[in-house]
Amino acid sequence: DAKTTQPPSMDCAEGRAANLPCNHSTISGNEYVYWYRQIHSQGPQYIIHGLKNNETNEMASLIITEDRKSSTLILPHATLRDTAVYYCIVRTNTGNQFYFGTGTSLTVIP
Amino acid sequence: EAQVTQNPRYLITVTGKKLTVTCSQNMNHEYMSWYRQDPGLGLRQIYYSMNVEVTDKGDVPEGYKVSRKEKRNFPLILESPSPNQTSLYFCASSLGFHQPQHFGDGTRLSIL
Image (tube, rainbow over all chains, first blue to last red; front, side, top):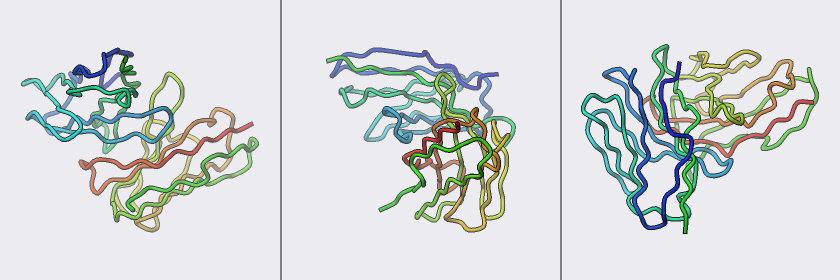
């Protein structure tokens, strides 16, 4: 059973905000939500993570719903270099493992 | 420079010939992990290690072994590789379980 559900692909115009959704309805109370991205076949790159509160760093903002069953990653001003596969990740409920899923392929369009 | 180093980056080999993919990190991280990535399946965790001499299975451990004798190294061993282990492999490390993972550049294995 999937731990996270993300749309397989999205487009975003350059300069606009990219909002990437993720459903994690089985998340437990003490589990963090992490976001990574992968450009081509490079190693995934950490973006942001959070537990309950919204988080912001130099790359992105993370909005987590109050019931924690879903979250949204926001890239405020998307550039062509943000074209990548974005993974929403939660810890599995069977141990100290991570479930990456298949991610969302974001294409930023000039 | 803080990094996770995997070797080799590319390898083509034959079924049944034992191979080891090395992974080393220079950040004194406790948590290390191996993933494989296949088209349409995303990244799947193979094995992970919470600390020295502590390893455990991930989602797809069959056909793989690992060891964690030193904090910095976490080799992935394929005792008898088979074609279904042809994949792109990533090693990752983090300071602790809840900390961001740093990934290596990947190892592309082809088992003929």
